Amino acid sequence: MTRLKNPDSIPLLPKQFCQRIEQDWPPTAAADLLRSLNEQSPISIRLHKLKSSGSFEEEKMIPWTVLGRYLIERPSFTLDPLFHSGAYYPQEAGSMFVEWIVNQLTLPEEPILLDLCAAPGGKSTILLDFLQGKGILVSNEIIRSRSYILRDNISKWGYSNCIVTNNAVEDFNQFGSTFDCILVDAPCSGEGMFRKDPNARAEWSVENVRTCEVRQQNILSHCADLVKDGGYIIYSTCTFNRAENELQLLDFMEHNSFEAVQLEVDESWGLTKDTLGFGFYALPANMQTEGFYFAVLRKAGSTTHESSKKKVNSKKKKSREIIMETFVQLPSPHFEAYDQLEKNEFIFAFPSAQSFLAKEFLNNLTIVKWGVRLGTRMKNKLVPDHELAMNISLNEGFPRVKLSKIDALRYLKGETFSIDAPQGWVIVTHNELPLGWIKSMGNRFNNYYPKELRIRMELPDSI
Image 1 (cartoon, rainbow, N blue to C red):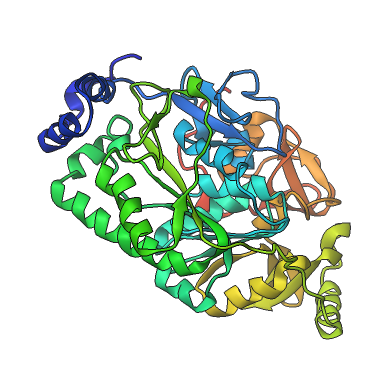
Image 2: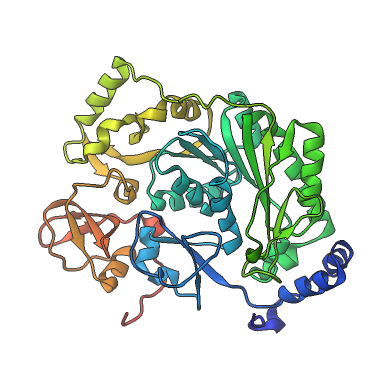
């Protein structure tokens, strides 16, 4: 590892934090951990499973995931059209253990998953890759502004079977034992981010650690009744504090019918078992990660893994056909497998196999995103939505036009320029991956890339 750049501008590690690390960890491990927090962070990304672009695929692979890559240096993601197309997601390597974890669990064919503290969305994209269009992911974020960031990242990832919500954990109590697995990436004191985010050092305090403990305890207590018998809680934090990790889980299991799942890990990865044997620490002293803790709990009992599919009655089918008549420009053959509804002039679609439950969520939670937003009805005409262009199942059949890298960046910045495209709604692409919509009028076009997503920095003179 190399030392941090500009160390004089980085706040010192909090004194009380250092004292606790020296108290909780063996002397050599404590010294190594504290030293590592003043070294340079590794740079890592996770590739999209279905949006292969060729970029970064030859970089060093992260051992616990076939999709993770270490980068030698941090590129300008903002100036890479493939980042905006969802070809990859910049993500801390330790967080990618979620992919390995979920693949070890015994889940039904179409599971119902909840990512409870999901923003900005990296772990939700892992769960969506795991589902591969089956089942449902409810991706929740309690802070309203962060829920929009979550929505945008999931929309870019391109799956339809996801609902983004903006709710407190208590709001899910009405659904009872609904979920096969809940991911609780708990709000924590953030000690594992001390070298990556200098603000984490400045914000740390003993009082804040205690506040996090109370918040985690409250979240877990509500999750106990939300998980089906035989279902799972994946618990994770980015902190080294035992009180926020294994001791938190010990208290939870003493009051609820859960047991820790013993995961068999590859010793070469460098994970450190926690002091109670529940889960593992990824320590930056031993691995190319930031600090990360994870454990899996299983609820007592068993589940029959009954199919969650429900028949679509004729009334629903007729409703879907009526809405389909308005989509005269939408040629995808996959639309028949979706239920569609109109709400506040937006038209949404959700895979029919799970829409019965998805509509229950729609009617009882604060919804930020429901399936895929197809478009907006304006004067009986459809303006297609950005989510539709990014969707990996429903964007087939539309006219497309390829853009060079510089023109792709100009498009992402909201500019217009000369282009050879058929008239009407056209998806613009770079390296075969969609970026968004234009409305072509032959010799000119209107740029429909969402204003809130546009590049704001100045583009370089040459790429």
